[in-house]
Length: 407
Image (cartoon, rainbow, N blue to C red; front, side, top):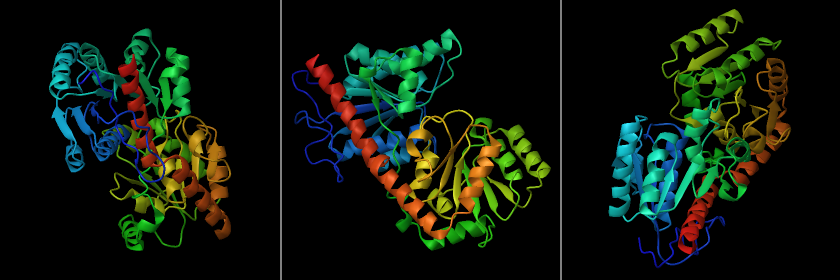
């Protein structure tokens, strides 16, 4: 790295829509993102690809280190460079060896800034960045478990960045309260929705009809959908209990998500469906390759999480497509849902309140539904777009680079 000059991610023009990071100087930066692996569907992995693409479009160079995975192809598509290292390991010996491996890559790749996105690789990336005197940025993706001193110490690596990106104001508050991180080092960057994919005008009727047929959904009944992997804290059981409280069963409900090996929980859900006489009303779908179409065939999207979501991508995506939403009243949902205007917030784990909200949503008349759709789409486009997320992240990079250059 040329120590005599500052670096910048993006020039004056930036992306359309006004989301252009400020210019520092004429030298473009090389950014190294580090995460455990590149699995197919997680927010961490998807965000890594999106930021890599933004770096390249801005004229910078995007490097990614992980243990590999399906999204390597997506990185290649956006002209980012991937390096395979065992950074998914929590073995202290491997993590220590990764410090040297990353430091060597930083020097040989002329990396200007290191961005860690998960705890295990963050420990190695932090010491590699310090060894090579590079700025270090982290993204705090969730509350993590912090019950013991050792766990909090392990988690705290995510607060050691020169700048710490929080996915929501909720997460920013959690970082301050739990780890004592100074507010001056925290930057809130909400997760962004890809408006080229989640745009009602771009989802054809054929796609929606095809998916409805695949799921065997009748075209004369409203559809309730809860997307999210099958794990207890996502609240599928709360939704089933709420559905059992509804007087009428003139709807269909789809739980969309893989059990990821949680066979016992899946069987529990199937037993509850039978116990509440919801067979033929509720179905579990392992995976969906066309979530925009899934939202478009849905009359109300639900997030019933019993633990607070760091952001709540499902709720933002559904709003982007004009769907009414119901979310648990905690975490990032409080920042994405405008109560009574784009959806409703209900107390976590409260099936009675969720049932009441479902009744309200299902009884919306067409003018009210259209108004709610307009407000929901406007909310996401104004506040939670992918372009805004990328631009604000590049702003954080520029700030960290400037901090190092002037410090």
